[in-house]
Length: 195
Image 1: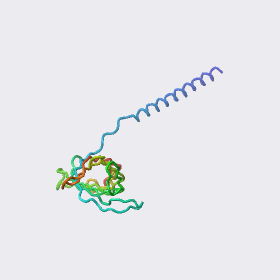
Image 2: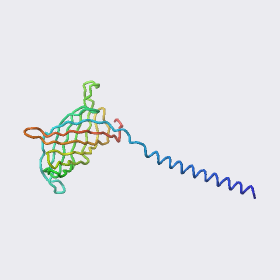
Image 3: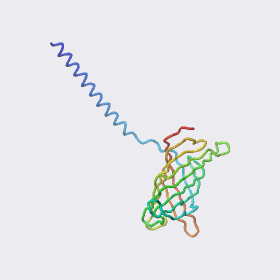
């Protein structure tokens, strides 16, 4: 009888020890979720000018939209090259102090690296997932935030997918000056499989 009590007590201690270890493991696991964020992805600096103010029309929801509002420029940093961006903006006419929403569009980024023979390393391209331009109340400029999908690439980036975020400023040109778009694109890849 005493032996069975000792066996039962030993079994209870083992079970309690196991539960305590499981709770401690869970606490350690939840602490692991508080690690600092991962380093920022590849960053390219964009300097572009407006090449067309697009064409006004109505989207599928009957909202007035500026289709094909486009920029062309250069990038430096992780992906030096030429950058094109074509946006569909609603409302079609910017209002100071208001927000213009981006409803689609596309972008391309051919990359030229001196370490590659001939310089051309390939291209990245995609579409606009979402975005907005928040216009100043007093001046002809806006803070611009865009989420760009990476739908694919060529050569060095063949088979790559993911997204990039653009944060920058659009400044309307004055007295014969071109409208400019400047900012940073941060790239995040979801698939780095090369085809």
